[in-house]
Amino acid sequence: MNSTVVKIVVPFTLLLLLVVGLLAGIYYTTIRDSLTDAANQSLLAAARTSVSNLRNYLSSNSSYLQLEVAARQSLITAYFNMPPEERSGSALEDELHNELINLADQRTVLSYALLDRRGNVLINASTSMEETLKLPVNFELDLTDPLYLNNVMLTGLPYVSPVIFGSVFDQPVIFFITRISDNAGIPLGMIFAVY
Image (cartoon, rainbow, N blue to C red; front, side, top):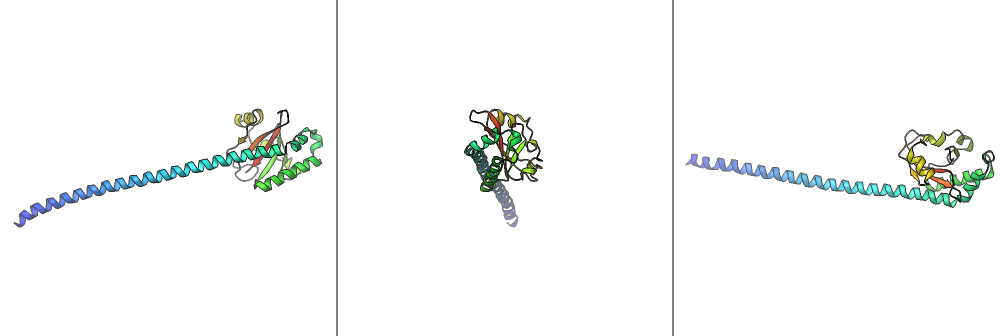
């Protein structure tokens, strides 16, 4: 009788352990997949929010730069209409330099800069006028880049640079650039906001 019980109990126990093991494996796999899916959905939602916030940030800063140019249009146009040899040291240049410094301070921007059509830095809010003359053309941005040249100077569309490392600002920066035109729509130069 003892052997009969063993013959019945041992296979039943082994079968029960096998079924419980299979159920535990299925349960573990199902829970792991559910948790992975939930984590992926959370990451996707966070990524979408981050992209949306970044897009809004870039768009609002680009729009703000265009509004600031429009608000100072008469001052900027008067400066560009001066003969280049008369600009340096003029009261208008000082006034425009101070405007850009105040604007940079209000917006916690690294710098605002005014460039001519060739990319020469005319006024830079973060440097003195003497140091501005030593800055590289276009802050070392490549003017042959079709996105930069075409969108800013030819179409008037604003440009947002990728993050630039190793620039003249000794830290990673993003340039927001918009064209400056006279009242007839003729391009005079560009204004950079450096973040």
